[in-house]
Image 1 (cartoon, rainbow, N blue to C red):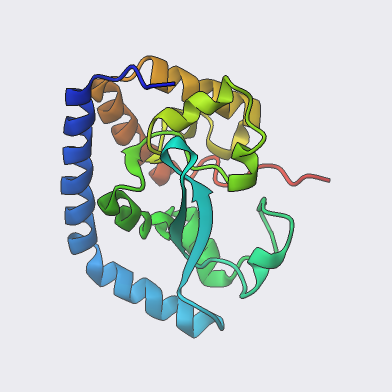
Image 2: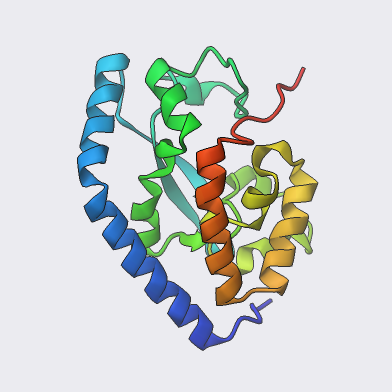
Length: 200
């Protein structure tokens, strides 16, 4: 199955990804250093957290984040986080509240593993159980933000997120990408939808 997005639009989108991710990493470098120091001083463990995700066409890659949880939390089978989650460190809470933990993903974008806008990258085991319709999500690169994020973020159910991701691909346009990026800024400042509900 091939994406219906014209090649020229893909090239323009990639050019925008390279330009903005490169500038972001340069301009944010002082903050990256400060965040790294804060994480090291607050808790033991690595500054960064990487997790294998499914990328374009389902190809696995490592998505990077600043570590916001205690060392070893990734070994817990409960991948979902919730407000008041004891695994989240004090610095991690601040980073999550302002979405600063996602900054390292600009590196993923620069490398071509992700895009600024697209469906959020799923875990590999989730992709393995995709239906043929859900596999359409893999026709574009995963993004740092997307249509599902600006509409409901983590307050949406998994089926709702997939439905919005498919809508994004079906109605793709560079204008829509620009709108999503602008609305993401407002979403980050509002700090809405950071955590979903705790599953009991």
